[in-house]
Image (cartoon, rainbow, N blue to C red; front, side, top):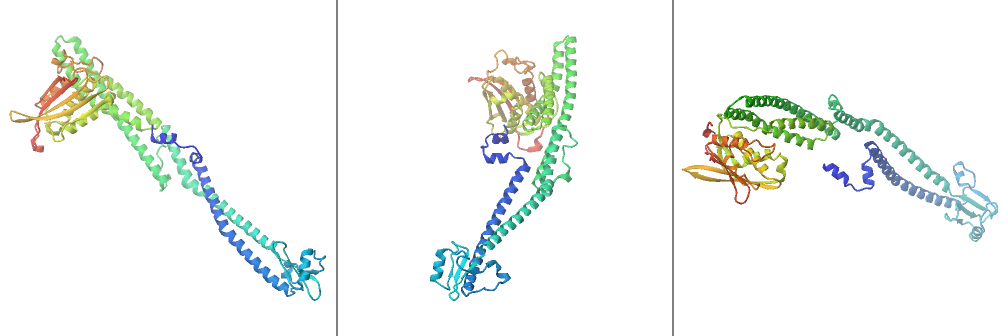
Length: 496
């Protein structure tokens, strides 16, 4: 299961998940609304308390001034600027003065009564005329100023919000966020539909930000996938040509088998046809494994269908060639110093593609310093055959161990490489003829009895020997003895 899918299945429920599942546009709307709400709240609580405090100070200062002026008996004449104070004179009844206040004024003639918590009026009794006077503190005026300040602030913030949202939602976001996302989704849909003409995003539609990086990365991925598909198509065409040639040669072999009287002639033709098949078998195995790896890593449905079709064709080719193996041909090839350990590792990497290898424990115990003189490709064929033979000798689970030892024979250094398995071993009736053509202990469709014959022929060409044993502790051992490499490098190359 992909990591993204695993993580999606373990996300805890709650607001975070609900918010994360929103589409981009609603998510951005929530975010910038939240931003403006926080901004408006910050502006409001930064300005309004200060205005309120200043207004309260102004009201208190004005009240003190009006009280001082009222105590002196002013103003008595109407002044337009002072109308808000509503200065009135008359009797206690006319001014609706409460009894408690009237008693206080009679006891304190000429003094000004003030209690903002109880009344918004200032009262005074003239000690000369005995008249009462009342002056209104402009609390309503300051309340109106605060209400207007709040209203104007809300209007300004609302207008700024509408303007900002309009610019974001109708100018900035559609151009720089929504359009690139829409273009990417349309290109993905084209890829799923197999519309190659529209699956690559045009460069002029790709911005220079992180979204643009994603779009460019997607373009590169799709282009690389198409290149791999084209390479696979060419490889499949070539393999189909080889398969047709192989089938033609196989038909020739069948015809020769029916017409030739001499058995030795039949074997010769069989070895000739098997030679072509074995040369084809290893690249077919690598191609088959590569296609399976692509099927695991590529998640595009259209590409999956094409890869599955390719896998079916490769399976068909493997079916054609699975019963044939290579028989060694006499040919002249250069040898060079070969490090045995990496050669074994590379051979195991090729055969490990087989599904049976997954249940087998493999150990390469060859010393990194061991060198033999040989041709890399031919020796690779030898160890691929030996390791594949060991894999199919193990029924279910088991172990394969490769180790090497150096020894001197007649003053000449040799390296002996042993491939041990803990399988069923080699049947006693097969063991004496194990390296002869078409001898096999695998009575299924996977073996033709040519693998070890091919391996022995290559080893002999290199001046070495190949032997097979049954181990006393169980399983089989295939032992390759090869001349140790000289340390001279390229000048030590020979022809085989």
